[in-house]
View 1 (spheres, rainbow, N blue to C red):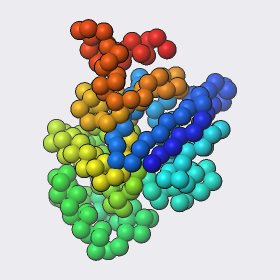
View 2 (view 1 turned 60 degrees about the vertical axis):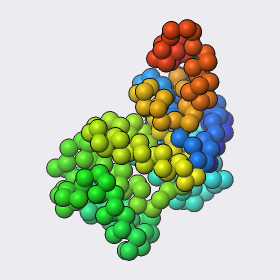
View 3 (view 1 turned 180 degrees about the vertical axis):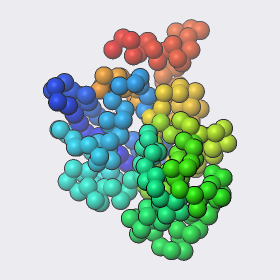
Length: 241
């Protein structure tokens, strides 16, 4: 479970990027995090994962504070960031072994997981190539494989669909559903409403650093006027903020 408690974040000018936000993401659910560009989605994800400091409030990862007990909290997290352009000079297999070392994944287990996940994402033949030679979609895939090596209790994804081919998107969505069914948290940001509608148990809509709606898709649709689309309602919520 991820508990976001009254968090705020300001940058240099003093304007609040995130303003006193509260949100709870339950075990066993997929929660979509929706909002326009600049709404604060990535900032929240960076605070959940300890990349950015929280100005006020706190975030608990299965009861452990990301502020006060960051190492314990981070052990329970896996992050797919919005940019896969990292560790470009490493070969794919070197990167995966590096991540496995960080999370103390044993030799037998890592070999099994790397084989299983690289096959699922059609990356077997690319593992001995440098990441800098990969396409954007392949870089996304190698990062996803790395995140899943230690079976994190809480899987955080920032715009995970971008750059993936249709099969990889299908496989990723299937894995996200399976992961949640095992009692884990899956929390992902997206601007693709169709993905959120078909995949999420609940969604949170954010704009200008504030949560405007939290609930399931049926609850969201209940707010719709006759003949209005989900996209129309999303725009109405954002524009009325």
